[in-house]
Image (tube, rainbow, N blue to C red; front, side, top):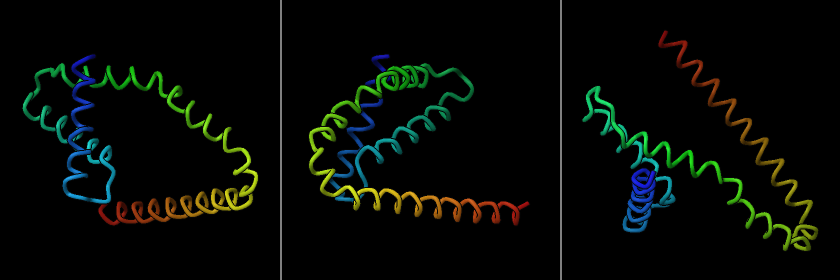
Length: 124
């Protein structure tokens, strides 16, 4: 599990470094995930059918971290509870923003799905 955690943290560090050095508007963890995907794809090709223990260790580390994901939301929940007055003062605008962004997300998702379905039908 320690090797898997090292791989995860190394990929995140590489992603943060790339985002900082290239000054791109993409968060470092997103670049890190892409690095992790490329790393795993490269290991699959190098293994050529042989079992690769690194992938299993990364999965074990990820599963271990996901077990405690709920604990990571506690500080955010405490921050929300401390900002109770601010939430009351701007409650209507917060609700409008949440509802509006949800509707926009649903519409964009449906549009992308319909476009992908149409392109898939044309290929078939």
